[in-house]
Image 1 (cartoon, protein in one colour):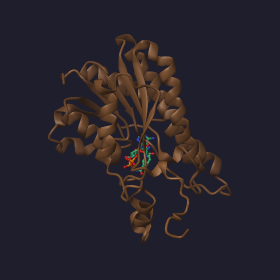
Image 2: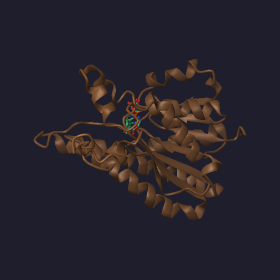
Image 3: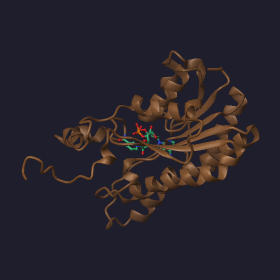
Length: 257
Ligand SMILES: NC(=O)c1ccc[n+]([C@@H]2O[C@H](COP(=O)([O-])OP(=O)(O)OC[C@H]3O[C@@H](n4cnc5c(N)ncnc54)[C@H](O)[C@@H]3O)[C@@H](O)[C@H]2O)c1
């Protein structure tokens, strides 16, 4: 791979984003990494590929921060080939919560508006180059409802269709747009479940592969979709979920009938 490949990865302070940034850097990319705080991006200093990273903390729900990420990629690394719009937040939200609408709007601002800003700013540079790949993190939670999770469900459902619509609009410029939809993956977002007795095992039983995913397994999917091996793939979201979304969650009656 040529050293000219440059990527942005948002939400790279931990979990899937960090694993993706590390994988891209280890395979020759230079990477602008984003997360909310400088503290969460300190890991880049200790990386064997430290020279390949530029850390730029900020909130992806702000348009000007997305502009700054693209500007940093161009200014420091000379271009932008791939943008991985991965930052996201969860939030269980009772319908009765008096602050439900504000919390809903915040989740939508990060998980949906953040992706819209990211697409707009990346596309500006990629259009001029006549090539580029934009990737976004959806979720199996965007396919159906989870208890108390309607804001996250709605936001991730939006990502599936944003990917399709952006691919329709940007294909003419040589820009591919795809998503990756993780199922349950052991990251910062799911850390709190480890404190709930039996929760991790209970979830694993609902996954055909009978285990949680690991961040590097998502990173490989992003790398594939960014690569020339995926040159005719656009407008799709790849399920990387151990079969979680393939399961209709019905009882197993095979030994009971
Ligand atoms: N872990 C899972 O089971 C799972 C499943 C489906 C989808 N996802 C999605 O994967 C993506 C990555 O999450 P993860 O599982 O690696 O969790 P994570 O908590 O380890 O990483 C998410 C990162 O995004 C950052 N972030 C949150 N809001 C931000 C903002 N406004 N601006 C910039 N950064 C922000 C967080 O600080 C955090 O470091 C998210 O979009 C999440 O919704 C995760």
